[in-house]
Image (cartoon, rainbow, N blue to C red; front, side, top):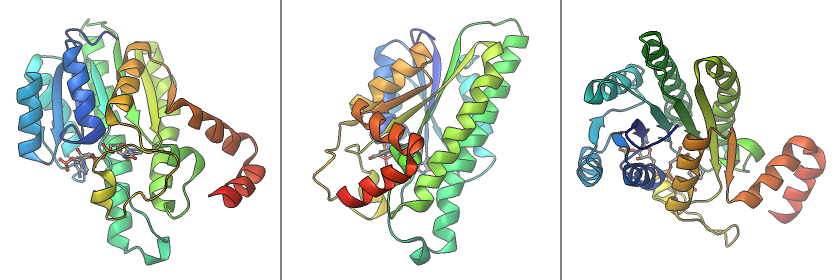
Length: 256
Ligand SMILES: NC(=O)c1ccc[n+]([C@@H]2O[C@H](COP(=O)([O-])OP(=O)(O)OC[C@H]3O[C@@H](n4cnc5c(N)ncnc54)[C@H](OP(=O)(O)O)[C@@H]3O)[C@@H](O)[C@H]2O)c1
């Protein structure tokens, strides 16, 4: 799809990767519908991009659909969705409370799947009404969903779930001209680590700026490319982990 003149909903648009994506989409001529919880941050993004702010807590199962409705009301249609909102957690699963597990699943999985559902329904309705513009969905997942990061079992599982959802949704929406892409960032320099309460303290891999991930997200919307790993070299461990899981685990244990 072409972002120029498109209406694109971005979740988690008030911070980090989502904010960088909102700015880049606006620079390419899109009308951005910025979704998230932090009203002040969303207002800033909406003002700077000429877009629309929609305050929504995606833990609430009704909010994904309401956000999509608000986006369509803002400009009469919806052309793209970047499902980016997400939270992290680091630490052994036995030390997690049930509430912490539920929060990760609610935001990273349920909220994201409900957004995909609402977007698919909206795109279908628009096509049925004779609007056959190209449309796209991008899910911001994580390299953790592909390789499984030690100490981040629940987080890794939530991201793997969305990868799996995207694989099937891609085939489901293809006949309607809707592309479904995933972007798998490695380590990104955003407030993500502060928010989860455990800093990123490794020297390698080095965090990349959120703008780099935003470029991959916008490129995925434009091209419909199924899966993009950022930085690109992390595609090698992702491939190894899937192709030869035993030797990959042995190597990961040795070098992590
Ligand atoms: N940073 C990394 O190293 C990294 C690596 C791989 C993947 N990712 C993924 O990239 C995505 C963006 O993360 P980021 O690095 O940009 O972190 P971030 O700066 O902390 O941004 C996370 C965004 O998610 C939104 N969000 C969280 N809970 C929400 C809820 N209940 N309802 C609505 N919005 C909610 C936040 O909005 P509010 O501030 O309004 O709550 C915030 O804008 C996440 O899915 C994350 O898992 C990040």
